[in-house]
Image (cartoon, rainbow, N blue to C red; front, side):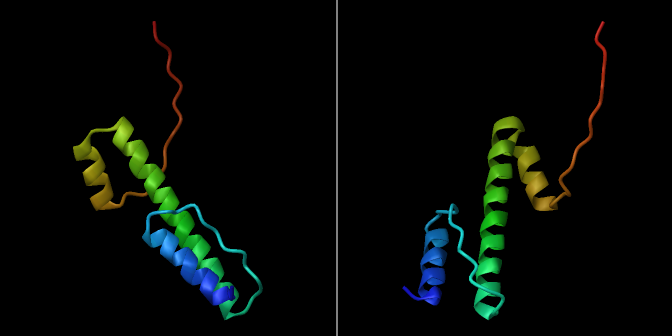
Amino acid sequence: ATPVRIVRSALKQVEDGDLDCNLVVFDGTELGELQRGFNSMANGLRERERVRDLFGRHVGREVAALAEKARPELGGEERHAAVI
């Protein structure tokens, strides 16, 4: 298969909901940039699904919906506490 057909096949996989695909980046040409961009897009979609799944398990639907709508910057902080 040609490199363009491989990209088209990977796009079809993503359209069908399979986000577990990465393309081999051949070189620094426009085709390589397309492959690199596809991989970046697929990684972003996987991360979004992971966050959505975690939210669904650990916070209420209202909080998850609000967080998704507001697009907050993800982060956190560490705290040490003693319980007596």
